[in-house]
Length: 74
Image 1 (cartoon, helix red, strand yellow):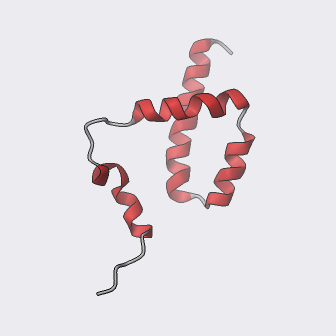
Image 2 (cartoon, one colour):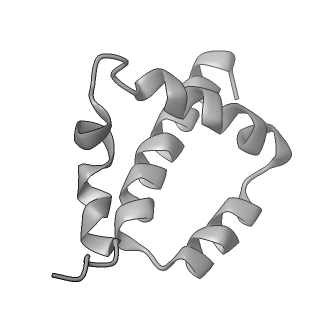
Image 3 (spheres, helix red, strand yellow):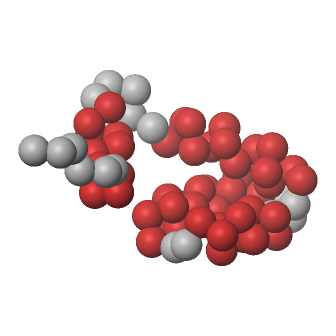
């Protein structure tokens, strides 16, 4: 695999991880993570960080997770 092919591969893994974290059971995600090579596990967080919009607010970045937060008592 060339360097460019590896970078493309990492980008695909990052996009898969974005989908997985939203739609797949965490235990299955851990199994997926464990299936990655050591190099992929080291490089993937850097690729994911590079994909984040630094100008986005926390609400924009994590707003979708609020559906999982406990509801406050009224």
